[in-house]
Length: 208
Image (cartoon, rainbow, N blue to C red; front, side, top):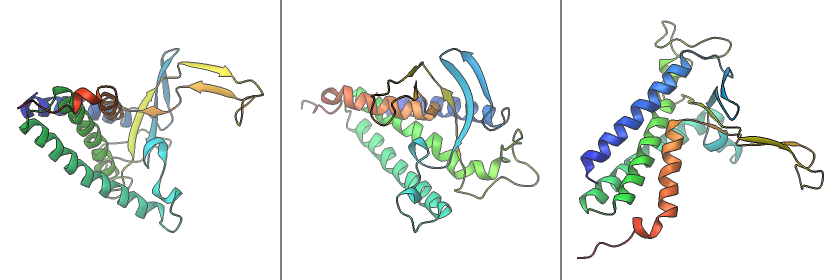
């Protein structure tokens, strides 16, 4: 798989990801949902931290939420350069197509969420009790590097009441799958799954 094909794939994923996010951001109020099927709904949420909404400040108490956000976004930007070089290097060395595809997916997903984190605070109004406007005259909801990642895909495949004897969650209602995510998250997850499942093929050494 060539670098050119990888770049085309990355652009396609980015376009789909950003179109879906901009549509949700400019069409839904925060927490508004739309049932598509019994096992799938579109619900607008915003993630201000890492995976599952976790923040650096949750672990390091002396760092404020805003400082933690800048640190996280800066780390993501640095990481995307590393992933980009990894992709360039693997295509140059003509490594496994699976490895190149996996890295391209991870790169596209990471870049898609970085765009939200870096620019969305400046480009959009907040979505509390209103549908946000793109490039509002009064300015965005926050400054550069303080944007929130837009999530919208929710797959509550099934729900079940857990028996009382189940540790910690006994007697509670359990829903699978609860996290809300986006196209970029799907690309990142697919890339990592490929690296795990096809590990031997992805990292096999080319015969000279």
